[in-house]
Image (tube, rainbow, N blue to C red):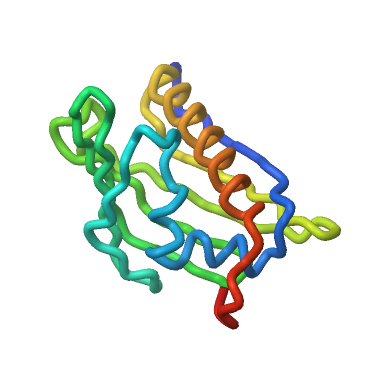
Length: 156
């Protein structure tokens, strides 16, 4: 890359109401069911304080045994429209300690929700490609997760 990194933007229309899509990002028990690119990559939620200034820490267990950890702080949460957070991989990941920022926007679209992910400050084209693939695959999983009818719980 030359100059300032260009933000990665990924869009997907999910056929679910905006509050339900937002909740899938904002509740640990829901996030743990889909926030990974593939079913063979396990997700452990180590810390999850979904509030402005709250911290999160996620550990992925890869099929090859690696266990990368990413964490950050929620900078802004506007329910059900937007989540802004820092995104920092921990050592020994090659992107360790590089502060990135991720913004999720949720826009109503006739019986559906458009999820717009803007991932900023990615340091290289290679890292951008890896993150683009990861976000696309995670949105595939979110779409499948939300295709299952909600339980009878009033909060979900």
